[in-house]
Length: 184
Image 1 (cartoon, helix red, strand yellow):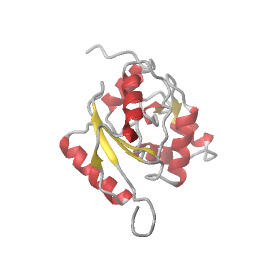
Image 2 (spheres, rainbow, N blue to C red):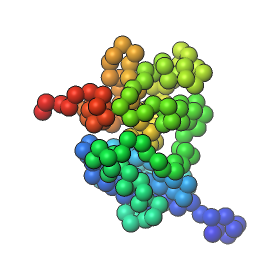
Image 3 (cartoon, rainbow, N blue to C red):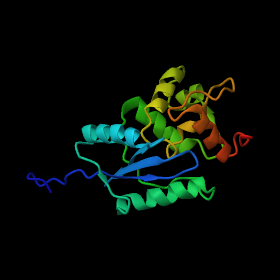
Image 4 (cartoon, rainbow, N blue to C red):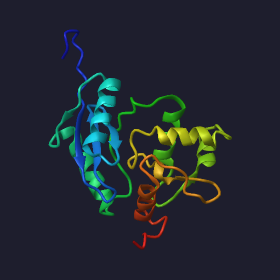
């Protein structure tokens, strides 16, 4: 506790290997707060600085933390093809407003192995015509893979953009059976 009797924020993180490269997972007492693609040293340093600034606590590397154990297990199961739904407490404190509303709808309403258009997702949250804003929300998603922004595609059948890179999006959609596995 701090001097005011409040619990200090605790942020722990680790890196796990995956079929799409190293992922950095970060958690607070409230749940998983961040997933970062391509977690090289340089990428991790930037992400950790952002987390410290936004959450008011210096993240601590703690691969054995109980706060991370379930997230690590479920991410590993997902990439092994043994898990289709994440059942994790999520800390939504890094996102708010429309973006949070869209990401919550995505997490609860677009199941494994399916996709949704940007415009369709906008309509689901009562904002038809806000497809571009949905795209911005996907780009701001602090919890990719777990909150499956890779499942959001263009209405004309295009794959759309992706913060982790289009090859990563293709691999995730192939893992879920939406796209064929790449030939090479």
